Image 1 (cartoon, rainbow, N blue to C red):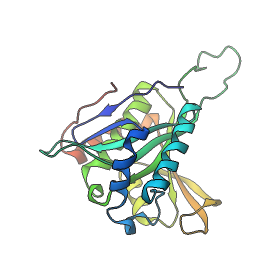
Image 2 (cartoon, one colour; image 1 turned 120 degrees about the horizontal axis):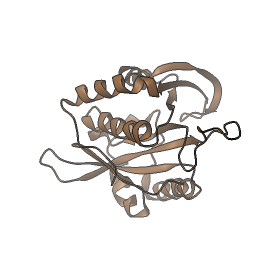
Image 3 (tube, one colour; image 1 turned 180 degrees about the vertical axis):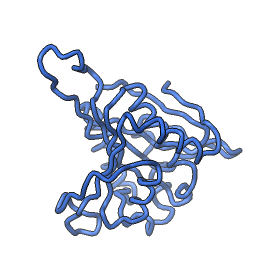
Length: 216
């Protein structure tokens, strides 16, 4: 189970999700609910309490690393604007005696459970958050693959994943419940370790200049 850590850049700080964030998350998710057609953003205090509790259970079990997304810098006060997570954290079982066997860090991981307040969408927040998370995954954990997925109907999300270098692995039919009470077909993308240097440069270029980095 990874110890809690914070990732910080110029525009965003990703800090460990906690119950102390509930009230601020309620405010963030209430800005414009029409933007959550495809996202699982909780609605209201009771849903947010349950959402955070469920996430923290996954964290306690060592299955996920959950963050609160805090917008910072640009002369404005820091403000909670959403959440994101590492999940599907898998440590592979290599052949006995293999020097590639890992302990305490994953071989592959997904990034997801991401939602942002309407005012933080189409801003540097999501771009830098992805940069910080993938940098940690590839450069600290040294994973082989980072996965990202979205509802196959979510054209905007698919285009955004492709813009940062995600490659379509395939379409998973009847994969899980969708946000509109239908059966979701999922578009699954990935970025491999060998592709990370190019993806990193692409993200940095989109941000204008290199942001701060690292866990603390």
